[in-house]
Amino acid sequence: MINRRKIIIFGGAVVLFILMTTFLYYSVFSTPHKYETYQLEKRNQTKHNSSEKDLFIINLPKDVNLVPVKPVGQITFNTMQNMQNSQCSATRGNLNPPRSFITKPENSPWPNFSPSTFSIETDFIQWKNNNSDYWNRISRGLDGEALNSEKLKMNEMGLTLNLHLKPKEGHLPIWLKTFKRRTPLDIVLDAVCRIDDISHTILYVTIDGGDFDQVVEELIKVKCVKVKIYFHPILSDLRNLGLDKRNLDTGLVLNSHYVYGLYLLTHKLDYPYVITLEDDLEPTPDFYRFHYSLYHFVFGKQASYYNSKKIFAIGAFSHGPIVDCISLAAKLSNDETHKCGNKAVHQLVEEDYFPGWGSGIPKESFLEYWGDWKSNRHIYDYGMSMLRSGENRYTLVPCSPRVRTVANAGINGQNSGRWDHYISQFAQWNEKPLNRIYYVDRRDGVVKADEKGKFLYNKLT
Image 1 (cartoon, rainbow, N blue to C red):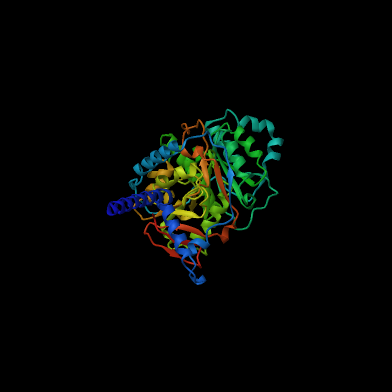
Image 2: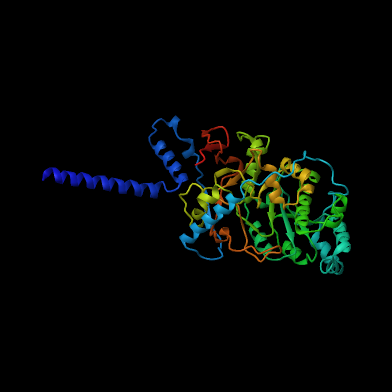
C-alpha cells in the first residue's frame, strides 16, 4: 500500500515536472530570440567578477521611448500571427532572385545632366510669388516636350525652401522622390518634421511627371529642414542616355527617376551615402540618426564592422526572411520583451535580401546599379537585389522599423492591408548617433563582444 502511494506520488511529481517544463518552454523560450536573451541574462547573473560582466547585457540601450502612431485599425493576435505567416511565406518565396545580368561597374558620365550647375540657390516661395502666372501655366496641364523644357529651366535656378537653415557639416542627404499626389505626401512630410536632428541635413526632393502644383503646395508647408527641389526631365534624360527609342513603360519611368536622384546626389553632389524616402513612406523619429550612425560604423573612415564589404545597403524597413518569420506579431502586439520587437532599436540582422523602402545606399552600391540598369528590365529594388544575389552580401535590417508604408490608393497600384499599416508604436532612441552600440545577428553564427567597436555579434537564432 505504501509502495503504491509512493509510486502515485512519484508519478504525479513527474507529470507536474513535465507540465511545468512545457509551460516554461513556451512562455520563456517560445521565441528563439527570447531564449538567447534569457540565457545571456542567466549567464550574467552567475558572474561575480566585474571584469567578466556580459557586454551583451550592460550595453543594452536604456533611453528608448515608444511613441504612439495611428494604425489603420485594430486586429486580434490571431490575425497578427496569420499576417506573420503569410509575410514569411511571401518573402521566402522571393529569397534568391537570379542574377540575370553581369557587367562591370560603370563610372561613365551622364551627358548634359540637369542641372548643369549647383552654385545658384533661389528662394522658391519668393520666386513663385513673383511669377505666379508663369507658375500656374507650367504646373498644371503641361506635358511632353513643353513640360520637359520648363523642368530644365527650373532646375538651373536651384529652387530652395528654408534658405536660412544651415545643415551640419558632414551631414548625409535624405532624398524624397515624389509624383503628383498630395496624399499621402502630406503624412510623410509631417513625419519628416518629427525626425530627430532633421535640421542637421538637407531634404532633396525630385518631382516626376507634370501637374506638380499640389506636391509643391505640400512642400512649402515644411519649415523644419532645408529643402532643395529638382524636376525629373525624363525625356531629355532618356535621349542623353541613348534610351529614347525604348517604350516608355512604368518600369523605365521608375528606374530612370531612381538613377536620376541617386546620380544627382552621389556623382554631382558627391555624397558617399544617400538616405532614400518615398512619398508613401512614413519615417520614424530615429530615421536620420539610425542611418547617420550606421553609415559611420559600417562604411565611414572610422568603420568598425567586421567586414564592411559584406554589407550592400542599410535597410530601414524591418523586412526579410528572418525578421518576417520571427517577429511581425511581436511588433504588432507591442511585445517589449522580444529580441526583435519595436523596442529593440539596437538589434540588426544580416538579411540575404534587399528591402528597398527607406534604405541607405552607399555610393559604391549605386555605382554597380548605374553600370547595369540600362540592360535590366526589372524595377530598381528587384534589380538591386539581383546585383547582391550570389555575392554573399547582405542588407543590415533593423528589428525596430525606421519606416512604414502609408496605406493609399496608389498611382501605380493599391497599397493596403499590409502588416505594417497596423503598427501602433514607433521607437525613439535618445542616444547620440555616434555613441550607440548595435547588436548584429551574423549569418555565420559568430558570437563576439568587442568593447572597442560599435557592434556586438550574436548568434543567428
